[in-house]
Length: 482
Image 1: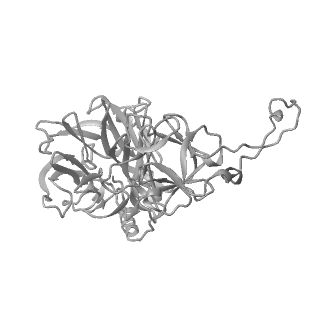
Image 2 (image 1 turned 135 degrees about the vertical axis):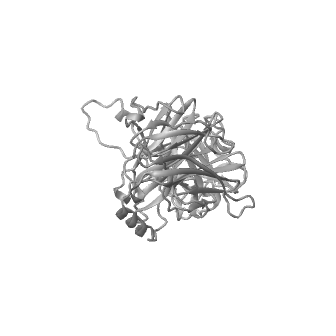
Image 3 (image 1 turned 180 degrees about the horizontal axis):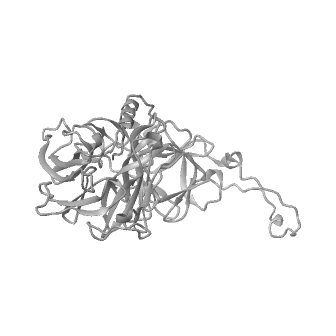
């Protein structure tokens, strides 16, 4: 987390006092530094950062200050095991006040909600420390529970990243367990376990300098929790290796502090902070991004941006379209394969919207799946809807026939249709999550607690709404920019 001078710390404190517009990735007041892995407790989502504060959200989209975490310190992490939430945090170190002596402490509570009757923190004690002289700075802890074992990584650029084993029943350090060096040249580490591989994700670069911060998240993997970890090119993390997962993009600068958010059904996302949100005065903010897996390696996905798309079924290859009669483009076939080689050529215009929509009904119109022919009734405009909210790093979208106000909508009977005009009704709002294979799940906005439905290809030509099955291609869609 840390390589901040006193001057930078003072400047950051002044910057945090500035108000900012809610125009960036998440809504509300998502201001935080060094966020912990997001945890679900008492019907809400919680994350904690450096200092005593944290953030809370009902839906993973709108975040507000909230939560209580005694002990202060820097860069906490949270894990839920059984009926306990363990919280690890560092006291001291980080180069603050000129030192690298630090203790990593653990405490637990049965709820993260201060209003809950079983809320209350209990001290476990120190599980790792550094004396300020050795080649390690004991801050930035991160948990991993895998195969019945609880691991904790910690450390910064000041020396080694280390791993120790804790007791999942108590959160205390296992008796006799000694720290193992696993990486250098990183900080703010995180741990994943998937398909027999242990992944160590660490933050490279510099922090705490707003839009000049060079933070980026990199990864190595190992068959054992204590290493050796190597990156995709085979470079050991103990020699400074690391394959890029996510860095600066768009208006978000300085990606650091990875946390896994597994939403199930093949949807995984990462929490992190950006050192500078350029749309919020350069403040440090929480971010949530899609997490993909390619050839056994985690990589950042991309939240859908406003644009025109073909919406293609991964199951059938058919394109989502208005179920209307086809309109031919006027053309003399003799100008194609009968034309002499030296005949003049000129561009042909695409079919116009005016020509195509002459056959459309005035009211609601059904949709089907057909061969994509770059026709206006197959071109969809996907746009975030301001102030409509969102879920887990993605806004709610409207899906319109490009160039019109005709909107894709869910019906009360659980089918899908189009309506002549977008009104902002919940049935016309869509949640689009990128799956771990890079394709997309498209879901209508639904009341909380309702059985979740998704757009699926019931057959080669029939789209409908049904429960998403992560083992099937039916609910997977490709969005191809036009």
